[in-house]
Amino acid sequence: MCSFLDLGFGVLMFFEKDKKFTAWIVFMGADHRQFWRLFTSRGWRHCFIVVPSYYPEPGLMAEQHSIIIDPRTNHIAVDVLYMAPNLVAEHALEMGAKCVIKFRVDRRGLRAYVPRGITTCVSILKAICGIGAWYVWTPQHFATYLLRNGGELITKGETDGEHVRGKEAKG
Image 1: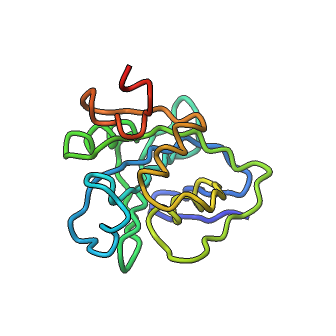
Image 2 (image 1 turned 120 degrees about the vertical axis):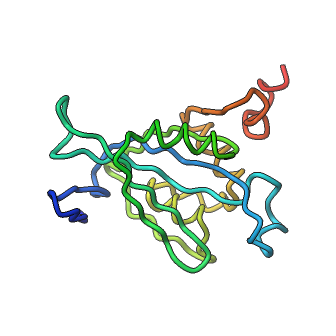
């Protein structure tokens, strides 16, 4: 079963149950999350995902677009940008994002993950990526989890990602 997004010029498929794709997860600060400040540190209060979309289908001649899924406090914002996801990630870093993690999502053979408890940006992104780690709650923990499981850290400066890199950042 898959979902369809009709953009007028064709039908784009995404989030099939047995699908592989590369996602760019953007981590950034947010000042409006008063309650969330108790659990997070500065610069690590929000995250959203950039998913590639191809028209007409994946291939050498396909146009690459980006679907941005941004879980907010009272809704989920979904935007389609007509530029490649890596360019969207670079722009997010230029606009002040803490870091971007490029993560290869392989949903083949995974059971559907149902978020339980408080619905946050992290729980929604874990559901999209098929990650069932119940112990990952905050954006900083999510970034650490992604890096430990094969994610590629992309930062603007050398010290931007030191909070999630661990020991190799200090050495």
